[in-house]
Image (cartoon, rainbow, N blue to C red; front, side, top):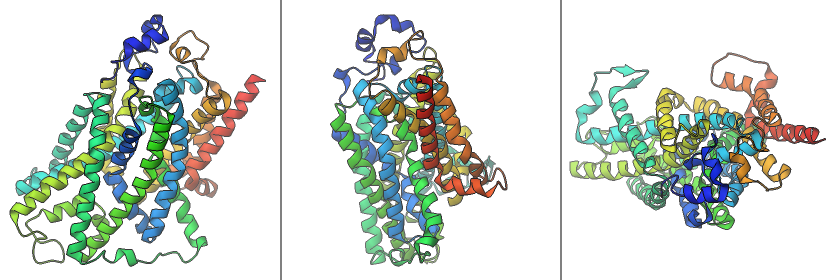
Length: 512
């Protein structure tokens, strides 16, 4: 099933007169019940495949670099994902009940034209994520090519474009095309791909853990590494922004989860699938990363710690014919074995990165961009726009260091998207009490206003207090008043609270 295959049946239910509406196109049409086929496993597999990605793999490393021990890092990851699961499930409900996507649902709270504002915010964030994952996937492709053509790594003689060397640029381009090819096959191709990717990636990760465990004769030194924090008072200033970053990690999906749940068979399927798939997988995969990296420290004592948290770096050492730092011989002596490892490992990394990129970072913004001009931008065109902007954002710079990534990038994501999620939840669950007239969301002259002032004021109110802290975290300014620096670690939480309260207050005042 491709986007829009159900358009004829959707129009029969909505009314044929809406086919000419500027708010309608086949990709944004509500999914009729007969086309809602996603099962509990499909939703669980969606999260399992999305969570099995390199950014997830590196989360624990970033937290341990801040001084946490392994179990503190896993607790922070688990807590953040349990928190973000709440808005995900709340915004998932209308998708399944009414078969509508995120940009269409946003029209109910922000207005038929005002909904373009949160859609663009969410889309631009997704473009950044798309670029990050495409860069990471491209690095795996580069490693694969270098296994069979070592001279590839020296191609271009050190020439760079915006800090990206030619071999990395080629890998980036190849992986970029892979993403766009799958998304152009339609949503059913996404579902099938995610269903198959979920178990394969997990098996490959466990296999890598087995290899490093045997080679290191144990799980290595990191599992015994003590915490830098002796009390909760010392730990709290690190705990709060870290939890906020973990919440922000999936805050994009807290908005556009209806893009997937509109294909669900029912509320039970989407609820159980997501509740089982998200927090458990994030904790388990992060734990695998800790154990693999810890054993790798014992195997390769001369390798930089910050690089060992990147599985692509470990893959490069495993498939290299040269001895890694601190050793006198290659990790794998046999050239044939190195080639086999390269094929299997790159297959796993590419599969994992494609899974999260397509589901989390292309489907949503493709719909969001289509919503900007439904008569001119299709789902496929929106996917192409996402791909281009994913290059423009220079994602390799976003991944430059743990501080920029966790506090700057993830903190900024939460600052922007938390208030949007809060406004949508307040409107659907409290103001409208789960009752929507879907036809009205596609009518240019209907009862839904073009702009809802209450939603837009609430959005600004939720973002502004955290903006100064974000500018400091991203090094765009040197200093701001201390009060703003104290607020920023709570960016997602303060944004959600302020936006939700402001929206409900203004809505009550408007209704008298």
